[in-house]
Image (cartoon, chains in turn brown, cyan):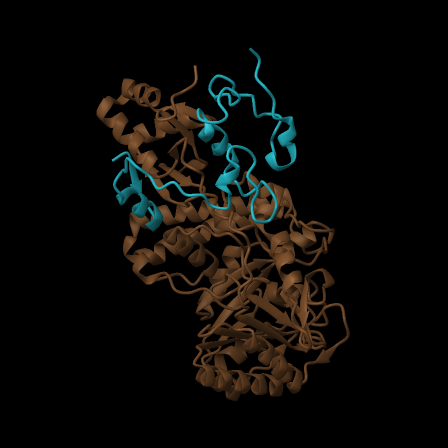
Amino acid sequence: MPIPSAEARRVERFFAFEEAGRRLIFAVDSTAFVEADDPAWALLEDLRGAGVLRRASVVQRLAERFGLEEAEATVQSFEKLDILVPIDRPRVVVDAKPIQSRPLSSLVLHVAHDCNLRCGYCYADFGRYGGAEGMMSPELAIRHVDGLFNQLAVGQDVYVTFFGGEPLMNMPVVFAAHAHAKARAQAEGRRISFGITTNATLLTEELATFFRDERFTVTVSIDGPPDINDRLRPLHGGGGSYERIIERVRTSKIKAVARVTLTRQATDVARIVRHLVEAGFTSVGVSPVASGNARFDFGPEDLAKVMEGMRALTDDFVEWAKRGEVHPFSNLKTLVEQVAAGEPRGMPCGAASALSAADNKGDLYACHRLVGEAAFKIGHVDTGVDAEKRLQLMTEMHPRSRAPCQDCWARYICGGGCHHIAWLHSSRAEAPWQISEGFCDFLRDWYRLGLTTYARLADEAPAIFAKLGGPRSACGQPEGL
Amino acid sequence: MAIKPLNRKAEALTDRPMEDVRIYSFGDCCPGFLPGWEVGANGGVDPCPWQSDLPACHPCYWTAQVPDNTTYPQWLDRCANISQDWEALCTVPD
């Protein structure tokens, strides 16, 4: 017997899980997040695996256990959440819209293709990105800046980040590009923000003053306490970099963000983050290594250890929140803010869609990690952005092109994950690039942990939400790269 | 309350009144081709709300050909990826 269409409800995707005595439901497409009571949880059991249901039958089955009134209210609340939907309503596919190229707003200038450290895992080949060592000239940096400005829309804001290699090795170019970009932004009535990602070993008090006055976001690469950092981040001439970094950051009194690379040789993320918070960094973010080298890249047992540490840090985060303070662990802060807003995310970051990275040969790439890789080249300073190549890349990188994303409950929190990691996991084969299954499981565990932490905050420290929020950079990360 | 909204999106959804009539709008599809395989702007069938299109056309256009999932839960099994496997869509036994 067919179900009359007015009575028929289809079930939209949801992810339901129990954690620490809470029963939580996350609506996959709307990213609405709720806590369930007994009737709601019982209804979910009824919906699991169902395609099309007759509304009256659903209410009736639930009423047998909880009474008609409760059953009706529960079904209605699921209809409001768009988990139970009238069958004749078209499905709103969040990322179904054609991909559009808008002007790039963010530029990463690789001012120095050289570095004074020799980190074994460096994806940039010590700043050389597969090419020769070399510095960007001030003329080229200014032309790159002009290239960015010339394609902007009216009133569009601008972000310029100085990157390397080690950008402090080429400060004259940082000064020149900064002055030029600032002047153009002022002349055109645009807001502009600057950032620099550095190992801080060459930081001086004068430079710190400049960065503070010009309101740079200064991101310092450091991997944790000395026993971890010095093993992974040695100076070019040998010896550890920890003492020098901390001494420079302290004496220059700069407010800096710490950015940690996690490798299989350093999986104790809780110890690392706690150490750097204590050392005075205003924000601490971690990122898994992407080296394509088995000495550093994670195996399954390493990921389990990392997740254990992440879990411990969520406890810290909640404890801080109860005292009214936002914990500096920025990965979790960003995730909690994202859950709070509940806005579905179509792409993981701004690579190629909002951001490009410029090298010392004049080439433009989809992001700073992909500099030097022909597959991700999206233009040149002489010819500008290659619109067709950019659109092709954005289409190939989009989660809707990737099979594992189709049925993933976390796809609109995740947006498909880092393109660089996906590309390495796909052994640099042709698009669409896919992140390995084990790493996707790790990411799902992380997003689930974020949801759980959010639910704990809503319960134990709701006042903290007023202190969260704030804009993200084009790369999708709160600050730095 | 059966559910407690936790984030802003959940609040927005549960705060709205239940409507009898909903706005019927098409996203990336061309209604002129109803019923059938609407094609998105990129030339693929992927962006279409295809699964809802089939029963949505019932009973006006494409009546008995669309089995309901309750009686015939397996009818789509051979079409895991509709953009590639749509030719495998099968009829149901009498």
